[in-house]
Image 1 (cartoon, rainbow, N blue to C red):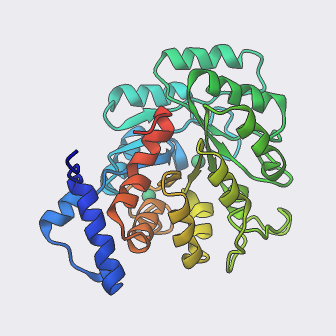
Image 2: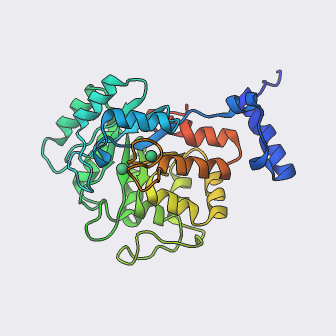
Length: 320
Ligand SMILES: [Zn+2]
Ligand SMILES: [Zn+2]
């Protein structure tokens, strides 16, 4: 049997990693225009809201244009817990205006009795997953399990905000997440926020002490083990929580990404309007994380996975 030709992208990836190994200078190597266009990955932001700091639909698209974002999972928060109130209907409306840019998720109050009927309606209307799930309920509450089970039935992902402590959301990641991962094998659980990222380290301070631990990561954290054991678990790198955790110990992060290259999702959760942070203290989470990852991850195949393909895999539930 003839040896199959590697795809151009694979070939460039191999060539780039060989060059890296030889010289360790690849982040400074200037790519030719042809290499740049061949290696520039499509960008899918797995975590974006409308109404973030009152951002309109058009401002949200403007943010995507300014940050080179082709598509985004747009996540409603129907109860407004945490500060952003965004109806699933608004996301569907935006989707109909910008079908090639917006991948609509839905979210609705999981404490209401008609939650499953509402989710079924959103499913019929074209929503592709649940998120952002962010209500003041502990992770082991049966109402949280009910929507995870629904996602498992309809082959959907669910993005969960994990924040331990008083006034938090889905508290108890360390105690309860694995039970769901064992019980529900089809749902893709996308982990987000402070307590998710605190568990990158084996050493997690109590939530009432800090939600943003700093300094070197202690290897052997819960995220490493769960991501290794459960391929339907994904990590959403968005927001201050993602960036702080990934940048606190760059050497550890490089290894963490290498161990889970198909489960890391680029996301911003950025509230700014223009990609420059004019309404957000000059800060844009999307541009900040893009430049961090482009410097840290030199293999173009891994970058393509993080920037686009992993999100599609989480969305579809298949190895795309
Ligand atoms: Zn968010
Ligand atoms: Zn921004």
